[in-house]
Length: 99
Image (cartoon, rainbow, N blue to C red):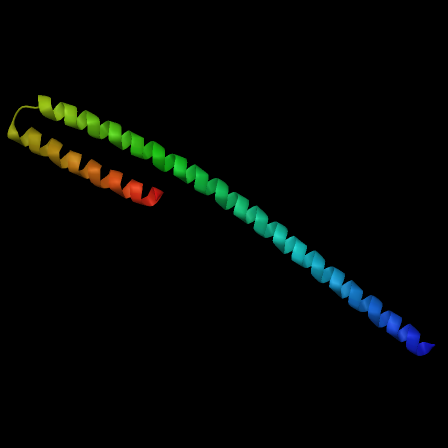
């Protein structure tokens, strides 16, 4: 009789441990799901910001190129050419980050 009681106690204790481990695993899984969700939201937000920045750079580049045609003098033309090259480099860098 004592042996049966002992076995029952051991069985109940091991079930309790299993339940606790399952609950801990469930909690960890929920935490990971929340982290992935937050990271996904941040990635979407960053992607939108990169796209907006790239669009602004393209607009700036267009403005620089159109004013480049109207600019008189070699110094102004060189400065606008340099600015245009910098815009191209930044635009490519943003595209690289986006990819």
